[in-house]
Structure formats: C-alpha cells, structure tokens
Length: 409
Image 1 (tube, one colour):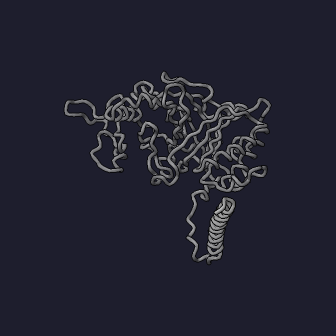
Image 2 (spheres, rainbow, N blue to C red):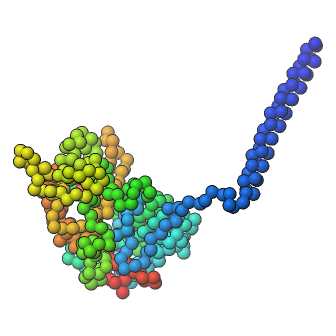
C-alpha cells in the first residue's frame, strides 16, 4: 500500500474513534440530564422526609432575665468588652442600648437588623443569644448606684493579669451553635456601637458541637477534666437564690465574672493519671470524687466525702486538691468556655479556660472561693489567670423596651 494511502487510512481510523468517544460522552451527558429531569419530576411523596435543622432553633430575647445566662450553653461564644467614648453621656448610652437591643432581638429571631448589608447571614439563628453587662465605669458615668461588689476583684498572688484581657465599660456576650451566626452578629453589633464606644478586647470560646453529646453533660476543659459538676440547676430554688439579684435596678439581673485562665497543657502532659486525679480531687475518667464508690456516669454527682481517710490515715481527697479548696458554703454558677490560640515558639499549645461565673453577690460568693484557691490549690502549678473583668448584668426587658432601662430611664 502506498505511503499516502496508509496515512489517509490512519487518519480515518482516528477520526472514527474520536467520533465514537465523543458520541459516547454526549450520550452519557444526555443520560445524566434525563436522570435529573426524571428526579425533578418525581412526586413530592417520593422525596426524603426533611430533618429538623438545629440552625432554626431560637431562644427568646425578651423576658424577665436576659437570655444567655441560664440558657444551656451554646457551642461558640464571643465576649466583647467596649470602652465608652468620652463624650457619651446618659442620653447617648440610652440611644446605644436601644439600638443594640433592637438589633439583638432581630438577630436572635433569625431576622436581619434594619441596616444589615448581608441579610442572608442572619437567617440561621442557631440558638443565638446576645447578653449585655455594665462595668463599674459605665454605671458611675450615668450616676447610677452600683452594687458594692461591682469593682475589680482583689489582687491574688497567682494573677498575672494583662490589660488586653481585663476590665471594660460594656460587655457583649454573643453565643450560638453556629460560628457563622456568631461572626455575623458580632459584626452587626460592633457596627451599631462604633459611634459610641471602642473595642477594648475580644475573647472567643468553644464547647462541644451542639448535638455531639447528651444535653446536660458537664463540659470538659482542655485538661480533660469535667468543669462545673457542682453547678446549681437553672430553675431550681438554689439557682434562683445564688444567681438572681433582687436589689434596685439590678433586680432580675446578676453579676458576671470573666477570668481568662491560661492552662499549661505542655506541663500537664508530663503528669501521670494518678497525679491528675489527686490535683483535682476527682477521677478524670468519669468526674467522680476520689471518695466515690459508685460506678457509671452518675458517679460524677456523688457528694465528696472530705472526712474520708485512707488505711494509713491520709485524706482520700488531698488538702491541696481543687475540690477541697473550692468547697464551701458559697454557691456560684459556672458557664465556662475553652479557648485555643496559635502556639508561640516551641510550645505545642496556647490554650485555657474562659472561666465565667454568675452570682448575685460577687464579693460574698466568688471572692471567698478565689481566696482559698489562691492560698493552696495544686492546679495553680498549671494554671495562670491572665485576664479578669466584673460586670453587672441587668435584668431582661419586654418587647418595645431595651436592656438597661431600669438604670437609664
């Protein structure tokens, strides 16, 4: 066969193969399209049943108490402290709180604020709460009568406080089960406040994702320990007495203390399990006190027997343990979050706890506990408070009202 004829035949074969492949691909696309049309035309009865979405859950903004205090903690939280601008007076603060309250009430219902430029981000409330607190400087500026406990905590020997995590005039606690929801709400609220105040600090915390464990499970901090076992239960008489104030403009409100506690996870890694249990006074595995003889999850809530001794006469719960040092007549409600930042240098972790406590009287309830922990608590070897702030959390408001009206009206 002449060379020219062979070349022409080869070209025809290639063209034929190419046409076959392209034709097959086109047929495949047509089949996929047909399948799509078929699925689109199926009756609604054949469609899978829609599952309820956690993102649609809402928590009412209005009420006797502010939401976000006795609310079951959400997965994500941001704490923002603002400093009021020098020119902001009582009237200015009243305007600010009206704006913030209105936008917060909308966001918590899954509705965009009036000036929201990204309204699509507001439609998933995911149990969003926005909670406001007043610092000593704010109350003083408007001529209000501050509770005696509304002041920085006493200086403790273990403290290494940094100004970028301490104090502030106005607190915004923004929490939800979705991080996008939190980020959007924070941006909207800071835009509201920028003509009245400047951001002093921002602290972000997290817990387990919503739905990843049973409701009511005690949170674990990044040491792996249960954190908040002895909390009073919201709605009970003990909780009502411990948390809610009944005095003046604070009636229905509470005191909030935020302590940023750095945790030396790298040092903690070198401690064996027995040493960890002794430092806390509880078994890390299930949170049960070292004197517990129970088994299972409920053992966590056994009452610690501080008088129990070993066969050779030593306390089963050591004198230096956190459980023994924190135990007393005082009752507080813990609502803490973990934090985890980018490590610096050779360390593996820069992590810790945003210790949040609620109590009607900070001086009478929290300070005595903190003094005992400051004096002797083995956990101090691995924990360092680096931030501290105290705020008065006003009562809630009804529709048409605003947070802080009991002080500002």
